[in-house]
Length: 271
Image 1: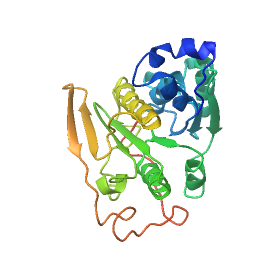
Image 2: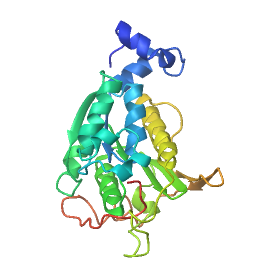
Image 3: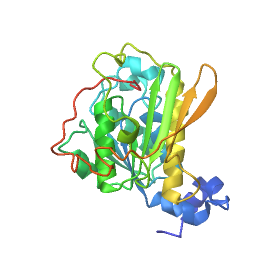
Image 4: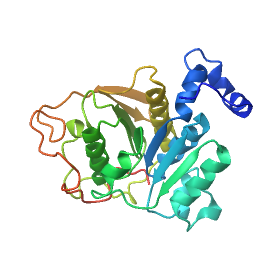
């Protein structure tokens, strides 16, 4: 960890440094950390924006999509001039312009069973900002098996949810053992989402990451926040470990992601 910050960093992060609960040591921890963000869409945009501003030292970005004009209603790190560009490139440019302290590592690919474990192993914390159950299960399994903490978020129309899994409590499969049957969840291109909603949920995810890196405060491990933007209410749902969980249970059936099946794409949408 670097206790010494240069004059520009002392200026840039001054509002962190003057906080007793952050200080130079907390900011140094942020600068020395690495975070993998899976998805550079609706949720990934505010996550990347605020983690970059906070001074996360290395940000990895995983996404295989290109920017579409319909994305711009909520994916705020991309601009009209970026339409047609790979999202990882547009996101990298945004982060670099915002904070040159941050090293950006782009992974223009779909997270899959043959690359997830290797990618997760390179980072301290993972953010699940994906838009489908297959990727969510993959992130969960790779992180749970490696002991890597991760933040999960999802949005749908006016509703959002966010939680954190640290490895000391339940995992995502304790909450959702398997994906819902085909056709029971609206397609990600037809369900729609309130444009500002991913910003709210993504900012909560970024907050959880900052606390995890600094080792400060209480995370959402064991709790899920369900946010209803139409009524402006937040409900807290307890999440308990499931002894029958196929990943973290008493007799797990999944001991690696390379041989597990992860199929499907659309589900509750952020993209």
